Image (cartoon, rainbow, N blue to C red; front, side):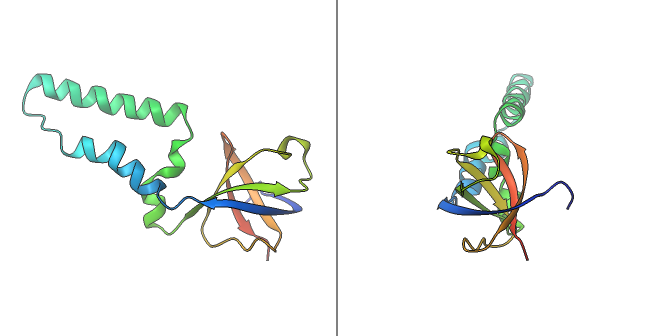
Length: 124
């Protein structure tokens, strides 16, 4: 719980990303599960595709779409700050990973992860 920004900021939610977990599962996980690795050639093809998925996850911010987060009850939102305290946040849109719903009238605490993705919760 350390490292959260507590500057009294409010947000405006642009959209809730409800389909992110299923899109990730269908695009990346399911093809790996149905692949038959009965021959040496298909074995190397499987690990080649697995390697490409790992590189894609490493170099992009698609990790927030992990279906495990959806199973654990996390919600994803696209949002922007209303009158942010940091100049770097002005005019930018971010993706929030939240354990509970965000009440937009309340002040939020957030922690930047990377690539415009942050963990967020309402300040009590």
